[in-house]
Picture (cartoon, rainbow, N blue to C red):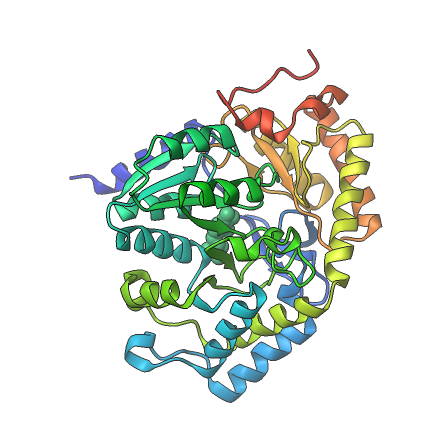
Length: 426
Ligand SMILES: *Cc1c(COP(=O)(O)O)cnc(C)c1O
C-alpha cells in the first residue's frame, strides 16, 4: 500500500485548483508591529509590513498585555496543569470569565481554548440539550459554527446571507412548539458586512427562538467598551448567547461564550470540547484580561483603528483600485481569480516587502478571490501611501481589473443569491 502517494495526491489536487496554501515565515517585532521579519525559502531574512493580521488593534504587543503575561508566568508558572474537571480552575481564569461576563453584561461566561472550539462546543451542546431543536444558520457562517451545527445532529435550515424575509419564511414554516436556535455573526470577516441584528432579534422574539451571535471580528473593536456591534447598537440584552475570541481584537488566544447562568452551567457540564481538554494557562488568561480591561476604558485604539481603516479605503478607492464597499474595518480588494490573487500576493512580498495573504476558495466563493487588507491603529499614514504605491504597481504589472465600476460591487451583491460575480467595468 503506497500511503505516501495517497497524501501527496490529495495535496496535488489542491495545487491544481490553485488552492494550495503557503504560510509566510514571520517574526513579529514587539514594539514595531506591523513590521516583522520575513524569511524566504532559503532562510534569508528581511523586514516587511504586515497588512493582513487579525490582531486588529495591535494588542498582541501592547506593553501592558505583554507585561501581564510575563508577570503571571513568573508568579504562577506556564501550564494550567490539566482540565478544569481534574485540576480545578486557575485564579486568572476565574477573573477572566468575570471580566467577559461584565463586558457583555451577562450573568456568566465560559472560556474555551479557542474561538473555533467555543462555537463548535456551544452550538452543538445548546442545540442537543433542547429537545427536537431546529437550528437556523446564516449561509455565510464561519466553519466553526457550521461544525457546531453539524455536530449537534439536530435539524438545520440555512437562510440566505442576512436575508430576513428568508429567515422569517423558515421560522414561520416550523412548528411553534419546537425549540429554535438562530446562529449568525455580527461582522462577516471576508466581506466586512454587518448582520441586521435588531431584525434578527425581533424575529427571534416573534417566533420564540434563542439567538446566538459570533462577535469574533467585533469584540474589542466596536462599542463604547469594546463589547462588539451588539453593544454599539444597544442590543446585547436581546441576544441569548454572545460568542467571541481572545485572539483577534484582544490580541492573545482563547475563545468564550457569555450568557445567563443556566446556559453557561449547562455547556460547562455537557460539552466534551470543554470538559476533556486542558484549560488555558494562567499567564494567557491574565494577558487576555488585561487587554479586555484596557479596551473597556480606552477608546484611543478604536478611534485610530477606524481612522486608518477609512483612510486606507479612501486612498485605495481614489487610486481606482477595486475596494469592495462595506461599513467596517475590513478592506477587501477584489481580484476575482485564484491564480492572479496568489500572483499579486507574491509580487507584493517579493518586490514591495508587503505581506497580504491571498484569500481564495473555499474561504470565499470562486470568482471573488481577493486581497483582504486589515489596517490597524499602528499602520502609519506613510505605510498607507506605500501600500497604495505598491498596489498600483502590482495591478499594472498583472493587468488586474481596476475600473471604478468596481465600487458598485457591494458585499451583499456578491454573496446573496447565486454567488456569481458581476462583470467588472461592463
Ligand atoms: C477566527 C474565527 C473564529 C475562531 O476563533 P479562533 O479564536 O481563531 O479559534 C470564529 N468565528 C469567526 C467568524 C472567525 O473568523
